[in-house]
Image (cartoon, rainbow, N blue to C red; front, side, top):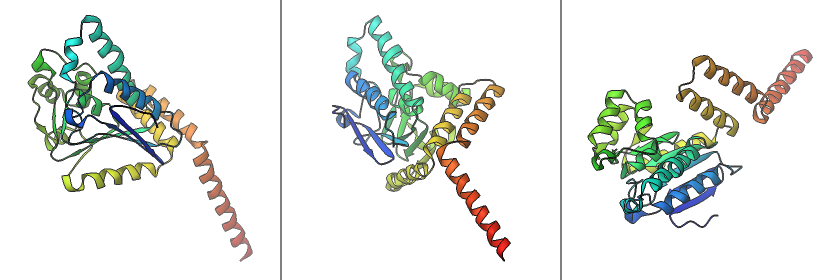
Length: 266
């Protein structure tokens, strides 16, 4: 396994776990953590047996956003690199990953931490998690896709409130009611419920998981309906000839032939 300083990377069967590991800093994102996240999500995309990536934070929080100690090092070009290269590459490594990426969110999910979660396919939160987009209080905006994803995931009036208020204490229930979370679980059942869903996902064929994610992402990107449905048809056609479906089809055919023989002999 790779030797990271701020990321824990584990593969167990069909599940990979990528864990931000700066618990004393509530997993705030510094340059090293950002580089390691990019490498970890690029690496897990190539793991042949993995179906699901469980993305979380060590300690009591998911991620409190960007590490403020990074800011003094930014000049005009460093900001462009942080947002236009590093940030964009990490978000793409998550959203375009061939695995299903599940965000397991607890404690704090603020600013850049929320942007990471919003890039995932599913977001499960414990009931005590606090959310917010705080960049505007510092005179800036989210730079890793947060502004855009709020507009695409929410009714615009709710997205505006989250962005423009700068509040950092939205509850899990509030975010769930707005439509930003997949599920909210009680603290004492959180781990078990997320593990149960990961097992449910892993029970499905890898090819159909991958294709389903890709078609949904294309539709989310806002392409015309006819084009999105054409992609869906191509995906289904490809899947129909995949190894898994071919095996099922052959088994069904064999069962049908056996039934015909029984009926013919009786």
